[in-house]
Structure formats: structure tokens, C-alpha cells
Image 1 (cartoon, rainbow, N blue to C red):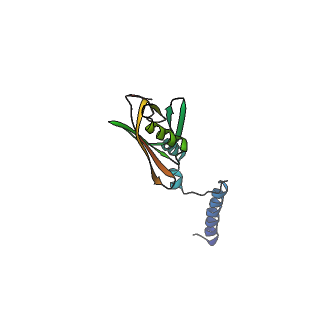
Image 2 (cartoon, rainbow, N blue to C red):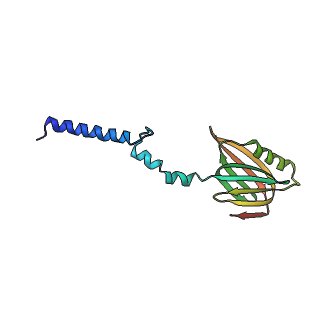
Image 3 (cartoon, rainbow, N blue to C red):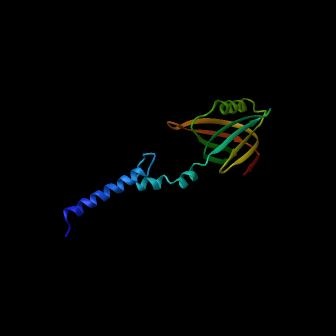
Amino acid sequence: MATESDGNMRVINKEYDEWERVLANPDNVIMSDDLKELLDPVSVESDSEENKLSILSAPPECATISGNLHTLQFMGSQSVGIEVSRCNPEIMQALHNAIKNKEEPVSIVLTGTSGFEAEECSIVSFGVVKMAPHNLLLTITFESKNVTFR
């Protein structure tokens, strides 16, 4: 037969457990177990491997941008799309100069997952599309006969 003191003990134990959970979290961030599973650091690391895209021209000038690979196509003209938080002026200027000066080929290097090095490239076109408030897609279409995958 349960008495009133047994009920009070259960409530106290439940609140004590909750209090221990709060004190065990020094950042004061309380998450459900389901959210903790979604934010598992192992899965976050595997999805967020960053790629670096570099445009190399002569004299040795290099413009680089970091982001996540979005698309990679090798059908007729080659195309690479990379998701970035912002497009730096150096990469935009390097692409613009490469389109203006078709006689001077450039090299394109993508490091990370699905990396490649394309030499003697002619930039056909490039564009930037806003995917989300702080997420842009930089797409570069180019032609190259010498592509090496890493």
C-alpha cells in the first residue's frame, strides 16, 4: 500500500534527477535525446568536409575559395559547383579575367572529396546563385583536355 510519503519521494527523486541533468551541462544547453542523436558529431563531420577550389593563372596568381562540393559534371564541357557562404572578389576577378583572356589558359584545382586538377582550361562561363540567406552556389563551366582525379 503506497503512502503519501512514497509519492513525495518519487517526485523528489524525479526532480533530483532533472537537477543533476541540468548541472551536468556546464553550457546550460538542454537537448532531448532525439536531438542529441541528430547532432552526433560523427555524422556532422562526415557531411561537412570542406573542399577548396583554386584558379591558377600565369604569372603564378592563385585565387582560392572554400566550400562544399555541390555538383561535378564531365559531359562535353566540364562543370563544377561549390556551395559557399560568400564569393570573395579574388575568385570572381580570376574567373572574369580567364573569360576575357581566352588565349591564356588557367588551371583549376579542387581538393577534398572528388578532387581533381584540370590543366590548360578555358573558362566557358561562371555564375552565382543564392540558395539560402547565407548559402551561394558558384558554378564554373570550363573545357580541358587534361584532367587528373585525385
